Length: 136
Image (cartoon, rainbow, N blue to C red; front, side, top):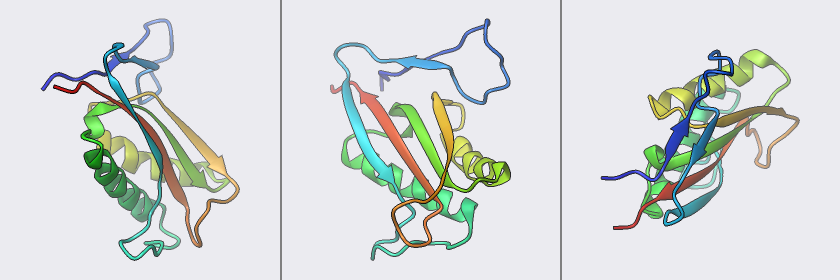
């Protein structure tokens, strides 16, 4: 299946970042804007309280479900914003590692942010994403 997303790297920028620095989609691509994926179970309860990696895993699972409902997959994501309720860099890296690993070699441009608080009780992780798909 043809993919709409083209990841862009630059030899003029550091290669320490674990993601592409930019991405494009052709004009005929349909953009899919996801609400922030949260670590909620089917009943709306926050999973894995206190566990950054556990919440990140559920966030990715919920993001996959939302993408599938829109006819897309993680391979169609063009950018992400990973929000982590912590001022500790190690907590951000814990959540980021789970999200990055879920995307495998599709290393989309991403922003990782430490935030004060997120919207649900005991919520530590949320991921916003935009995808681009070519309808056949």
